[in-house]
Length: 178
Image (cartoon, rainbow, N blue to C red; front, side, top):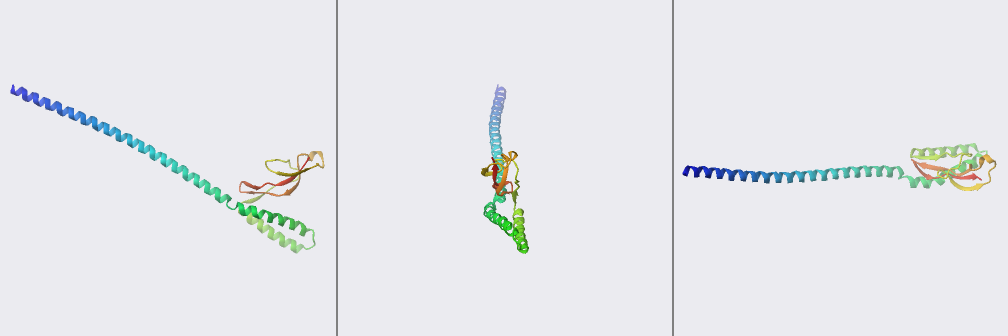
């Protein structure tokens, strides 16, 4: 009997050891699952932060490009009356016989316009006889059309329009036929 009791003791010890090992294994699996879940949560958090940062970089880059494109808008708008004055001066000087003065004004005018064009300013082309479009033109007044085919069309251009890059900074002011 003493042999059986030793065997039984060994068996009970083995059973106890196995149970303890199983419990430790369950605890280890639980801890491992918790760590895996925490790792997944941290990865998800990292990916979201990374995506948010990429969107931020893209947005600020786009805003910076827009700022550079339109940074000179105030200066350009303030120079538009100077361009108008050059046009008026050119018309008046062209009526005189002083061709040297006309050439000088023409040179200065061309240089100013080419410099502004290099900075992105361009004139909106509007011609007499074009159909009036409220999205592209600003009607100053309406006058009786000289002929029926000129009704709703541009009779005269009072003030030229200008575009800076792709943005209209001044719409052309026109007279339309009624």
